[in-house]
Amino acid sequence: MLRFGYQVGIDRFGKRVLGLYFVLAALALGFCGAAEPASASLERELTLAECIALAVRNNRDLAAGRLDRLAQKLSLQDAEDEFRPSPSLGLSLDQDSTGSALGREDDSTVSVSPRVTLRIPTGGEFTLSANNRVTSADIANRYAQSVVIEFNQPLLRGGGTEVGSSGVVTARRAEQSGVLGFKSAVIGLVTRTILAYRNVIRSTRAVEIAKRSVQRARELLEVNRILIETGRMARQDIVQTEANIAERELGLTEAEGALNDARLALINILEIDSRTRIRLTEPLRMEEAKHEAERAVHLALQNRTDYLQAQLGVENAENALKLADNARKWGLDLSVSARLGHSGRSFSEAYRRFDDNYGAGLSVDIPVGANADARQRSYERAKLSLRRSHLRVAELRQSIEVEVRAALHDVKVRFRRAELARRARELTERKLEIEQVKLHAGLTTNFRVVRFEDDLVRSQNSEVGAVIGYLNALTSLDRTLGTTLDTWRIEFESSVDVGVDK
View 1: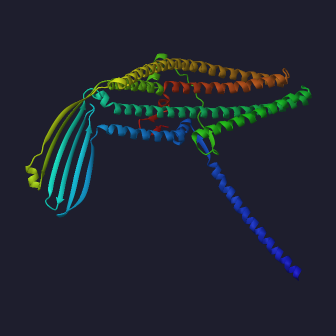
View 2: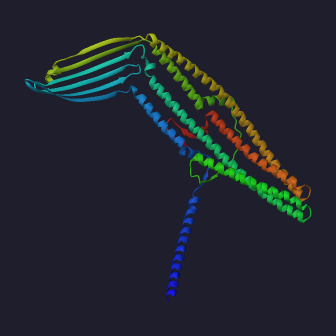
View 3: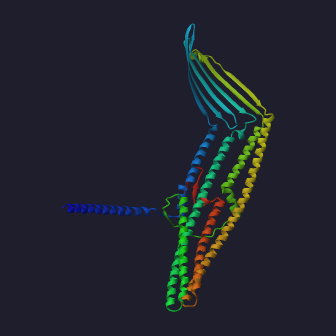
């Protein structure tokens, strides 16, 4: 009886375990079924324009560039505030207690002092200040009010609109340089995205060509077997076809590995989930582009960010030379002031008494000795810096002209190469078809068919490479001309936002 009861317990336990197993299996199947749509959701069809939009939106380096642009705009606002009124307000409360033989005296003073300063582009400065003070004492109260207007203007060193407004002008040029730098970063990102996208297309086409090659090799193997059965081919000749299949399968494996590497490289640029299976839907369309050399050079000089930044560098060097020249002058400053004051023991008494003061003066500062020599050396260094800036612009202009003409020639050559590659592929396909017909008729050897098959694979890959090479040459030409954003309809303004028109 004990044994039976023990056996029954085991059976019940086994049923429970079995039931739990089925529950877990059902849950696992449910999770697998739920996970399948999740992985399927990682598959995306992307056009080239959509890839560019993703790259511009997701790229972290570009996001850091946007933050830098915000900081630069704040710096520009600080510089432009230089000629805006700068108000301030001072408040003070003093309590004095003095003890003497006659007793203790307590004084309380409340003072309100507003002040406004205004700089002007000539280097001068206006100051308007007021002081309202009320003193409450044990003996008597005292009220005082004064308004002071001051004006200081450098007449030689530090004077003039070129010197006085140089800070704002330099800040605006720095803002323009920041805009150009950010634009260059966007152009570089767009170019990298385009090249990576087309590299995936090239790798995809290589896989398709390799698959068709494997299929043709297997069809050739079937033909060889038929020829052997009919006695029109030696049995040992089939080894060559089998070796050809192995080589084709090896080529297919290598092409699939290259496709995976190209896909991951594009995903890295787009900064999306690395598990995403990308299907590129952009067709390979090739149209001949025609450009006039002189117009292209002129367009590049108008749009190239590096050339525009070099021109800003010349303007900054010219401004630095003017400042260095101004620093060699004598200091001659004009100052004018007017003080209107009232004071008394009551408000009525204070406004009956006037305490006015007017003044004007000139101050001279003459640099001599080592001070004058140092300023002269600064002036000479500024001249050398300006000459280097001009040389940089001339060198860059020459380089841009050469780059543009070389890029135009490369576009023409690659278009011609793509046309020849297409013609060569068509002839190679025709040649292989003829040789296959001859093989069925026993008029050629298996070796020639395999060799023509190799020629077809090479010509197909060459055609795809030539077409993509031509399209990439157009992309490089856009970057050389500085027209990448215009070509892809990317709206770029001085703000930190970049919009892509799909």
